Image (cartoon, rainbow, N blue to C red; front, side, top):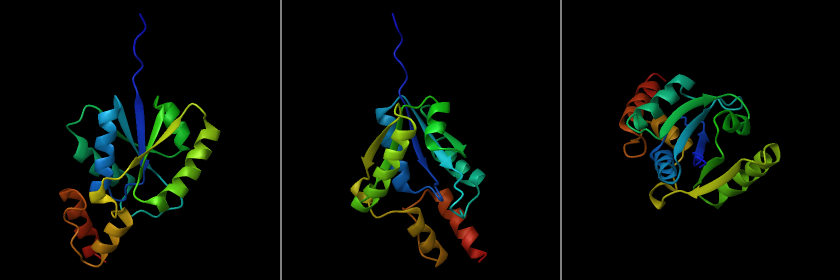
Length: 165
C-alpha cells in the first residue's frame, strides 16, 4: 500500500514586516495543506527595514506553537526553493485586482521554469484587503498607530526603529 504524499505549500514574501493580513493568509493555507513553509525572500531589488533574521524571527514568534508552519529564508528562484523543500504549491495572497496582474505574470514565469509547481491565489479576508507592509511602514514612520495591523512584537519593533530616525 502506498503512503499518501504530504501536501506542502509555500507562502513566499519579503514580510517587511509581517502584517495581520499575511498571518491570515498563512493560517488559512495551513487549514488546506499538510505543511506550510513561509519563505522569507532575500530580495535584491528591495531595501528592507528589517534584517532577514529579524523578519524570520517575527514570523517564528507568531507561529511558534504550530507544528504545520515553518519559516525559512531563501535567496534563489522561488521554484528552486519550492523544489528544495518538496513543495508542490505556491500560495499567493491577493488583496485586489491590481495585485492579480503582477501575481499572474509571476505565476506564469514560475510555471515555465517548473511545470510541476502550481500557484494558488487566495483572496485576502475583507478585513485585511487594504493592508500592506508598505502602508504599515509609512504609518509607523510618521508616528501613526499600527495596533491591529501587525502583531504586538512587530508594532514594538516598528516604534523602536522609527523612533531613531
